[in-house]
Image 1 (cartoon, rainbow, N blue to C red):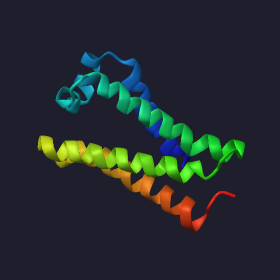
Image 2 (image 1 turned 90 degrees about the horizontal axis):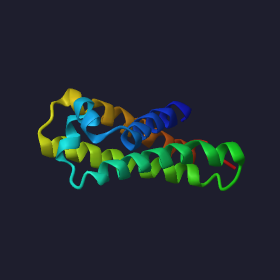
Image 3 (image 1 turned 90 degrees about the vertical axis):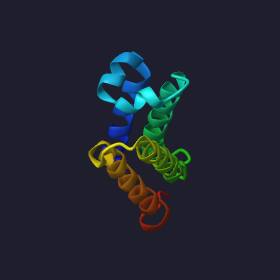
Image 4 (image 1 turned 180 degrees about the vertical axis):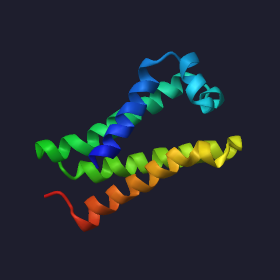
Length: 118
């Protein structure tokens, strides 16, 4: 859960603070997104989701938000996969999204069913 949060926080932070042109060098999908501000929005969702994976559990305030944050990240990764499919990207380009999707699903299941936070 912590590693997933770190991955989303890092990726989201990069989308928020780096210039779009520099992002395009590392993430070719950015060129497909219009308006460009949507890339910043995606980054913001990823950062908020990462915080939602950790802060409710650590603070004990509304811990039910943790699986909801993970569910939001699942939806974000489904959207990312849809974009990769629509663009006809190679499987290697979509693999980070697949891995993050599987991990987020694991957290959703774990925090809703297997080990809910009290």
